[in-house]
Amino acid sequence: AQSVTQLGSHVSVSEGALVLLRCNYSSSVPPYLFWYVQYPNQGLQLLLKYTSAATLVKGINGFEAEFKKSETSFHLTKPSAHMSDAAEYFCAVSYNQGGKLIFGQGTELSVKP
Amino acid sequence: EPEVTQTPSHQVTQMGQEVILRCVPISNHLYFYWYRQILGQKVEFLVSFYNNEISEKSEIFDDQFSVERPDGSNFTLKIRSTKLEDSAMYFCAILGLAGGEETQYFGPGTRLLVL
Image (cartoon, rainbow over the protein chains, first blue to last red):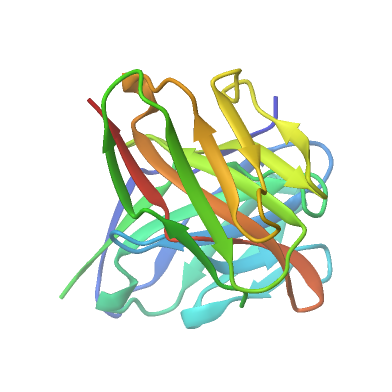
């Protein structure tokens, strides 16, 4: 069965430090890939998506993610963390446009002053 | 970005009772989804709904669940006889365009607590 693995349920960084949230998917066929963010008591907001146009995808709030087929990965990065980035981040895949999303278990990002 | 609202934001119910969760997209959409997130667990797909029919459903979406679009705008998820394990956050999503490609946009969720 298709699955998504996010390495690390909690990641803590200092303000200004690099953010790296890891996501790996299990599939031989490159899927559509997404990162969503969930702020406390809110819904899921789309950060960025990969749909085969370019391997490096830029999203909102300074985040970007790189699709690496050889590693079946789609890690999320941000060069410099802000306090406002503290939230839960979910990686998700879909195997056809408009198809169901399969989510990873989420990574909670904490940002220390 | 398409907007989706959900009502109620919170619902507390007794085990065995029926609940109806509502999703209201601001503009016209044809493709809808329901997901749920049990506290501390991952977001799980329940069902997708296209052109007034279920297009795909998960194993979770058993006979206790149903979806409909009763008046052409609202999209509802009904749980006929709630169980304790139905306690979760339920998210509605709609398919909208982002950068020329279709993307799922989520509502703020309904937190359901079954006692």
